[in-house]
Amino acid sequence: MGIRELFLRISGRIARYDASHNFTCDLCRREVFENERLCNVCRDELPKIELFCPFCGRRVREAGVCLECKKQPLRIDKARSVSCHEGGAAALVLRFKRGEKYLVYTLAEELTPLLEREFADCDALTFVPMTKRAERARGYNQSRLLAEELSRRTGKALLDVAEKRKETKAQKTLGRAAREENLKGAFHLVHRKEVRGRRILIVDDTMTTGATAGELAALFSRAGADRVGLLTFTSVEDRTLHPKSNHTRRNL
Image (cartoon, rainbow, N blue to C red; front, top):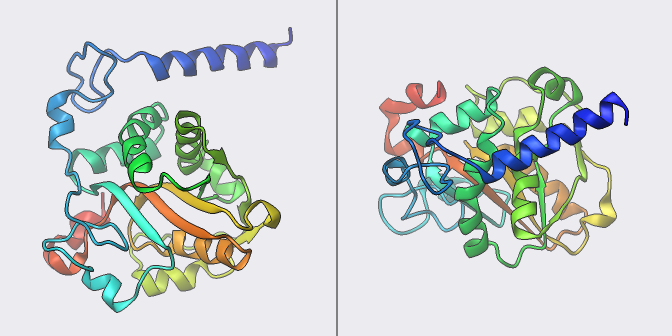
């Protein structure tokens, strides 16, 4: 057995162990006793979304379509998120992006029930691609890790059908229209036949404006996808509800 094969075998065993064993809460580090990723206290404190816009899935204060979707609907059939992008939920996403890859199991554990409830009829999962340069810089694509883990848990097919070939400006400070302009021509479909006629679910860690997923969804729809949804762990609440908190949320 070569060194590479030995390394891959050991890495695989470590990954399987991490997926099935947990001794402390991934947020507060309290001891847990039944392999939970989060303790009961931290799970209860997550800013879970219970009342949401039927289109974008963002938290709303009263039943009905949110103001952002009334102004400009997403180019996605339906989007849903577990939590608002704040507090412990935002902290988990940030740590996941910054190198704590094992948190994929924590996020997937929270996402699986929502996927099975809201997207039971989807027949394939996919992810938001990164440019090769950006993925090398980070070391991994967190969106892909999530999609792979959810595919493993649910048995749904995983599609690797799109590429991001163009570097884009940082999206943090851009509004929705600017983000959409920034993303034009960034994604390319490399396996059109795998998309045609399918009900596809894009998986990502967070949704801010929905522009990135919308660009991918438009690409899939033009290739003949039957339906395209979006599932994320967090989503940024309609900013018109809390204009004073925009600066804080952009810097999470």
